[in-house]
Image 1 (cartoon, rainbow, N blue to C red):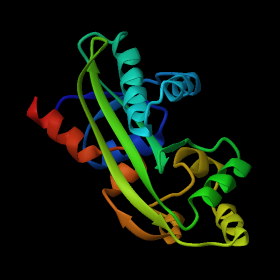
Image 2: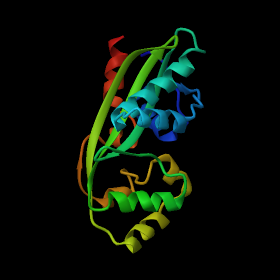
Image 3: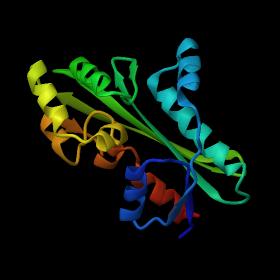
Image 4: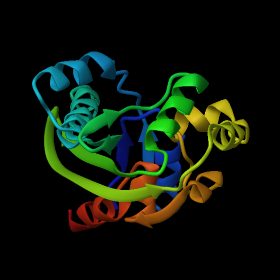
Length: 193
């Protein structure tokens, strides 16, 4: 199977690839996402378009430097009725995000892009729907005390494979997509080469 270069700092994405026996090395893209997101939002882009664009930008940036190698870029966002919700940068932001999602259904969108020599050769976007139970502010604060900073900033505000599962009354979609990588489709693409 072809070896991939993962254009991501995400330990979670690396672990998912390893679990599916996809060999990869890591090369950080160092893309500053916020100005890109803001520019796309100003143009009226949907959360799905933003996720796709960021995944492609990361893959293309790294693949420009690595001749003839397959580079995987990925991005995940939360879409709450068309509103883009990004990863928290503080515990206060995490609490506010959980309050916003409280008792509501939202989509988690994960995009993957494979590039070669600076151009996209394949991409895929998957979506999962999650319905959060109703919680008091006290419950949400208590939940956040159970999560380490490292996990909080790596997995967005919930860890579906751990404590986070208890936040939801309904989960529809692939668990790997929720964790940040639609790995089944990536594996199928690589195997087709």
